[in-house]
Length: 337
Image 1 (spheres, rainbow, N blue to C red):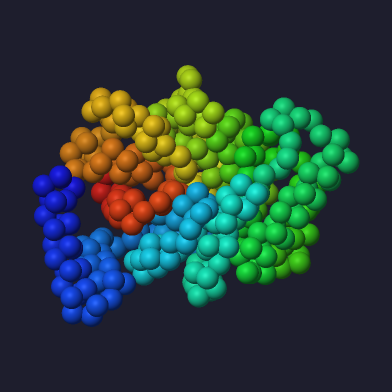
Image 2: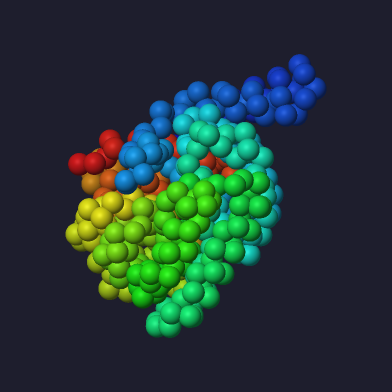
């Protein structure tokens, strides 16, 4: 949206909200009426089959971890749901503070209509070669974290529980870890096995595909290639996303749904670098995407959705960010060619 169009739209929303406030005396009613007007122009959400889960997932995953770590955001959560977002991802309170608790009321009201994901890390190093006993210890701690997550969420079941920061391929392929997941599944705590990583992602994803155990994998990816959380940059000498197609195909052939994350985090860090910094990925885009009118963030989301990721997880810290990401995910298929 151009600055002028955004100014006009915001002025209209302010007028509607002010009128509602004067009429009702309720600030919440004013916000609600302004929201309704704002969302009238949103496109319809697009869906995809989430790997072998067969769940028809919105192409936008609402990332709740950082966003809800310190406060509830029911306004944005409900707006997303009302417009078709049906996948919500959160994580352990040992990392995301109160995020699971702040999501609990929303989940309680929507549980049978959403795909719910949480996660906790495997406490091991990137290159650790665990003994059987050590692997059992790691798996037991992960399972205990799952139980704590369920308690925080006020639920007895999540659709998927990830091994978070799964940077060690040996652990990805470790049978003790997988057996602990199977026990949790048998107990009705979880249905699908998943992992997330922004370190050593290519080797981790290939290891997951080799096992045949994993249903979902969330990886840090940008149009220019793998994202390095430690440096806040694209991994040095990474293949581009287009060049990574064979890796994504192997994962998909193994039944794994691919979830992109940290897609535009590099741009967020570069925003103070001026206009040129915002163009970091422009060399990868088609003419139609370049001329779409999208923000740099929206172009990045649209691109990864059309070059290997089934869905994209966005950290949605505000209603404005929700709107921006929603539009990109809902219309990305227009820029396939």
